[in-house]
Image (tube, rainbow, N blue to C red):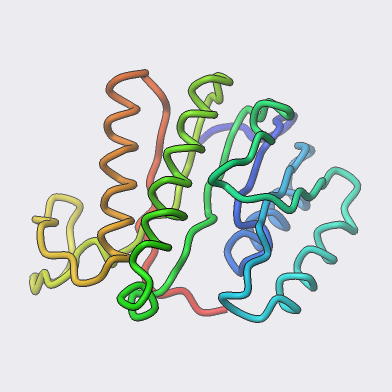
Amino acid sequence: MMNLDNKKILVTGCAGFIGCHTCEHLLKNTNSIIIGLDNMNDYYDVKIKEKNIGLLKTFQNFTFFKDDIRETEVIGRKKPDIIIHLASMAGGRYSIQNPSLYESVNIAGFIHILEQSRKNKVKHLVYASSSSVYGLNEKVPFSENDDLTRCNSPYACSKLCMENYAQCYAQLYGMSLVGLRFFTVYG
């Protein structure tokens, strides 16, 4: 297991449920500098996000940037050792009505994070994928070796595309990338 003490860690999507709890855990259990980034969009109640940021700001070693992953320069300015990339548009149903938004935020945003990470020599990048990549697969339990050719939403396609880009960057540039396929998260 990697030692997270004395690291500079950027968490994108820090105002969301998973992002806020990830930051809080790191702030309570390491002596690292935690940099939070979130665009504070209104996909769900912004007041919840503001409350989450308020909680994180009570920690001395937390800094927040309201910024968009598609164009942020925070990686170049702050030079994190580790990025935990949780910022994405979520929701399969909403993606069916808004596929371009998912392409822009999830895919183009992730490519921007990858490029900034490569250029700034980020040591490790962990990113959120989704169990949605299994799509219409009927075999249970799911396996990392399952066929992933039957996505059933633009959201699922965007997450699978992120996984493919991560694999490509790992191969091309030797980057240390880990994708987490979250199953339904409630918070």
